[in-house]
Image 1: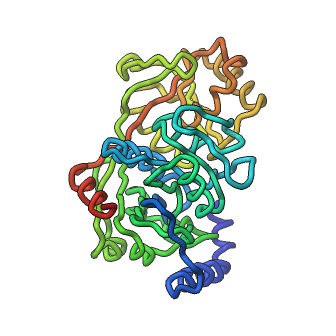
Image 2: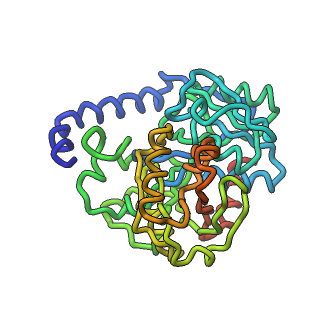
Amino acid sequence: MKIIRFILIPFVPIFALIVKLRNKLFDNDIFKIQSVDARVISVGNITIGGSGKTPLVIFLVNLLKNEGRKVGVLSRGYRRKSKGYLLVSDGKKIFTDVETCGDEIVFTANECEVPSAVSEKRIDGAKKLISDLHVDTIVLDDAFQHRWLKRDVDLLICEQRFLISPDFFDHYLLPAGSMREPFSSFERASAVIVNRKFSQPREIPDNVKKYLANKKIFNTYYSAKEFVDIKRRTEYNLSEFEGQKSLVVCGIANPYSFFTALKQTNVDTENYLIFRDHKYYTNKEIQQIRKMFYATNSHSVVTTQKDAVKLSEYHNELDDIDIFYLKIELMMDDTSSFKDFLLKKLN
């Protein structure tokens, strides 16, 4: 993998130039940023891979709902098998399947029960959500680079593990590195969210910290809540899975944090199947799971909440196997300060 990255280094300046030029066009009002008749909050990152955008979206939606706002969620629907605007949920019912609209938006719609939609053109999608569902606040998932739609709050979430990484390529631009934009893009954010996930707080090195000097910073982490049976929706305490021999199945960008969570709950993670991020399961993978489940004499299959959305569609093929997802929640170190900051921006 690193050999390929070394080969791609000559292309990094080209990518950097494109990013810089594109941002200049927005900054100088050559590319026109449009407003819509609702408050807009963007959640995004500057890296590829999982930094915790969707858990933050869910956290925001629930916070805003409690404040009496009529919230809608808009995503582009990464890796979906459809085009254009698509209403995923009206807040009560899911209207489409996972492959058509994308796994993250279904996960969010199920969890938050708010109007949710996908659209590559966020302006069109936002206008439709406002006109059809009468939302007054829109949360954009993965939109830091999508600058066409004016936002009132621009939240940039970064994984702590990325910020403190000593790996040269982690802090290098695409296509050789992991960064969509350089650290200087922090300047565009209303606030930076440092997500330590299941790790302890760590000091951010000076070479990165300098870009955060004038930024509002909030710290978040994940809390494992319970295991949920994906077929029966029955909830179980974490203690009931201690020492249990399970087959771990996941297809997410960063399996490291998921395995860390399982180890902290004392689940046996010796047997596992890891698929690529946003994996859409087919009968081939289902049979692979079945084969390994019985070959390892596992007691159950344990997966992520995002994978559970897709695996639940194979409930007939997996009717003889107990499958559970680990439910996690994003928690804020100082929820009160964050709430004050957010509402001040929106009011």
